[in-house]
Length: 68
Image (cartoon, rainbow, N blue to C red):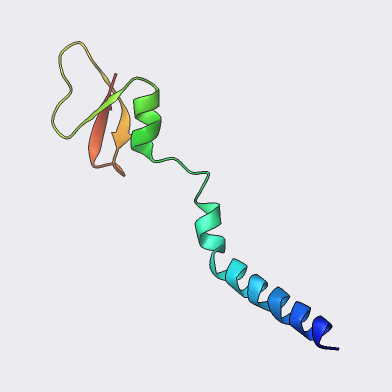
């Protein structure tokens, strides 16, 4: 008779832990804008872009410019 109660208890504890971590699981697939720009060959600069490069977007949440 103890076994079903033990299984129910472990299931409830497992579900409680999963519900608190749902926010972390949804963020796993997202990449930062800096990572995306670096993968495409760009560099992030807080100042103006170097010569012979152009602005292709932003980095660090819009605080810097991505130069290609």
